Length: 97
Image 1 (cartoon, rainbow, N blue to C red):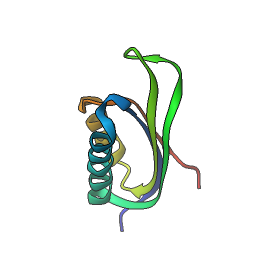
Image 2: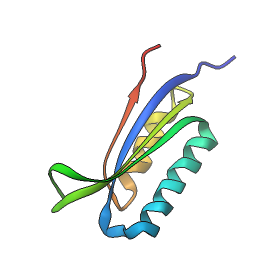
Image 3: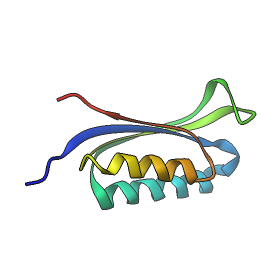
Image 4: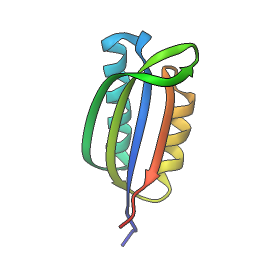
């Protein structure tokens, strides 16, 4: 039996992508997570003001996903976040049991 851990990830997308671009990125990451684990919940926090400018942007589109997966997957998810255009920031945290 394989070990599964609970994680949550928050991604901030560039608002210049527009609604369709953001929806496409959200779907891309949801599909990636579902292919490697189980999504427990998804929260769309919408457009919010950033605490400080990131890449000359003052607003970002926030998205939170709680999921369960193998311990090796978060590193791959982080790698994909970093190479995807339109992702301003991302964070993946292992949740305590």
